[in-house]
Length: 467
Ligand code: GLU
Image 1 (cartoon, rainbow, N blue to C red):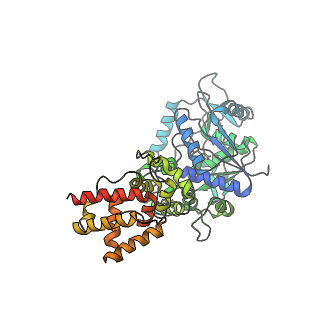
Image 2 (cartoon, rainbow, N blue to C red):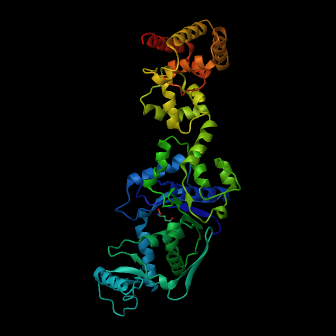
Image 3 (tube, rainbow, N blue to C red):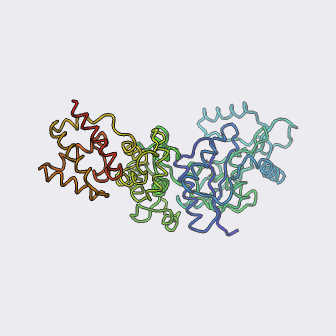
């Protein structure tokens, strides 16, 4: 088989972690870059810990990121008969054997080894047992080669060598007849003709055992690329303790999928000094040999910077659609207010996340019921009343339709009354939005509409007059 085939093989024991998503991304990029096949395999042999909710969460995360797979999802739990068949093949060939050692016996030996300062290792009691003690409970162990080394050239880490003495006879089938993790992975990768295994480097220690199994079964050994971990700022492995780690929680916090992808691809991989990679660009430039050997630290500020970049450069119609769930969460209905795309256009230059944008969009749909007192207090009551009156008059008699036209009207109001722009713009901004954090005045007026603008300034005028 010369055709390149890669896979992502998550265990459905939780949501899709950003580390898992990056592994999936590297597989997907290699596949797209090489015109190869990308397979999704759900490793659910641990029936106790695997859940349907986790499977759904993983698929949802992959789809949201746009990491579409070509084959699968395949579920390991559908392949138990296949694994059994291969266990039997190894037993028949004398490459695996029944082990009758009880848990108590193994525990006692392990404890003794610890007391004597030896590394605990299966001692091979059943490996060469001449007489089988009948049909008693047993596991099946792989007859691992003695002596020599098992070595592989990792595409990221270089050559990694394990002395075979360190690897004991692996259990490949438990007493209840179920196959064990390392065995299933090998059978799957071999029968799915996977040519390159890209996975987290927490699996490095499994690799020599898996290679021995490939060899015993007569399967070609794939290439391996072990991706270094993602760490938190304290250099400990990234976990919930450091904040959000699930891909879907990043969607819910208002990140765009392309921003998270761009962030993740740069976490461990580089292409010169480039920082911005759209999907096509990362596909084109991706090369697994440019993945670094050391762990990377997750940096939310950089992710925010990228997200702001993508928000700024996104189509406002698309952003409006993506913003809707964030507005619904705030019980905002947009039907009776300004056009959402127009609102987005006034906010997309400055928002880091869609959550932030939703927060800033609120005033367009809900007229202020309170005003920022401290901000209002900076102006005399008389000035505020005069400004509001002058602006209302100006707007009522004008036919300006765009932001530039409206801005010009405000300048006229200033000139006619010898006011500074801050003395007019700021009070009006407070009247329209309740606060001072808002887009340019012309943009707000055009987006809200002149009628609603006048209504809000009148309300603010009454509020000030009644003080
Ligand atoms: N199921 C394993 C995990 O989620 C991955 C195994 C592999 O990629 O070989 O960590």
